[in-house]
Image 1 (cartoon, helix red, strand yellow):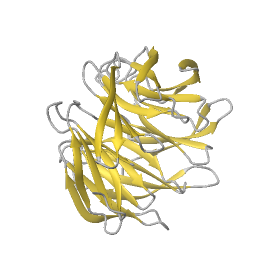
Image 2 (cartoon, rainbow, N blue to C red):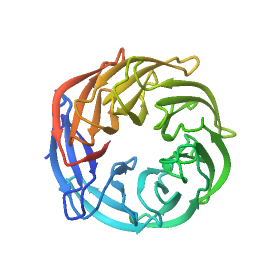
Image 3 (cartoon, rainbow, N blue to C red):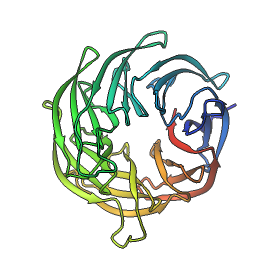
Image 4 (cartoon, rainbow, N blue to C red):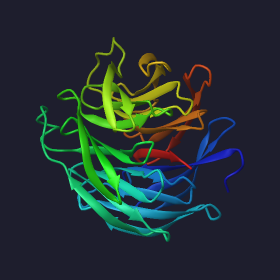
Amino acid sequence: MTTQNEIVFFTGTQTKDTEKGIFRCALNKLDGSMRIVSSTEGIENSTYLVVNSIGDRLYAVSEKSEGEIFVYAIDNETEELQLLDRKPTHGADPCFISLSTDGQYAFVSNYSGGNVNVFRIGDNGTIEESCTITHSGHSVNPDRQESPHPHSIYPDPSGSFVMVCDLGIDQIVIYRLEGGQLVKHREVNLPPGAGPRHFDFHPTGKWAYGVNELNNEVTVFTYDDKNADLHTIQSISTLPDDYNEGVSYPADIHVSTCGRFLYASNRGHDSIVQYDINLDTGKLTAVDWQSTHGEYPRNFTIVEDEFVLVANHKTGNVVSYYVDTETGRLSTTGYILELPIPMCVQSL
């Protein structure tokens, strides 16, 4: 059983449905050590997960050619997941899922399908699709931007708007959420070949930050929540100036709860970059890079502003770090949890 000194987190993996796919794990708050508590089979390529605000439901995508969304009840007594529902996403390779601020809807982005979904969440845990939108267009990279590739989808802090980072068309597409329907509001253009991937808002709601997979940059935006308008004020590299050892792609991005620090993961450089956030302007200063002690870090999560957990895709491990609450600097705890092809970590 999980103890009072442990924090529960879930890890999604790139495994077959006959193998263990979603792992319930525990992080020890005293030393950063981790352990596997239980595991769940029956879902293929559970590459992205999200837990609802009250911690009793877990939503996962199944990233395959005929994509699906799975809903589980989180039983904290048995420490197992119970499948409540699964539905097709009508798109190939769903790679991201998030929840509306009121918990009534789940949003899914289908990378290869070029479409995004909205699912209405019922009181009994079932889901029903209420909207599907297919993007169109392409951009300058013939290998990666031959068609739309929505990579992530996020509600804004007000809950009235939804942002879709589309790597294939170099746009953040903003929708109004109206009764479970997505209504296009505006498009924000990124530089050709940028490849917008993931996104996060500052706790104040005044700024937003997008990480671009193809040009290795973080874009800083001011955010007008009344008009849902993003205005670019800065672009900054995710890599150190002296890095010239090969190809690298950033993956994930998160702002600390305190709002003073921002972190992003680099696949290739295999690092977490830390930026200090200017609380007057929202702009960034890169201050540190920490090795992920593994290869190809995908998703990571900040746990209570005290720990960071990083999923290293190619080396099959999750690594824990202490967070210095004064400086934001990361330091390894020395603990590594081995898991099969981890793609996503989400704390309870």
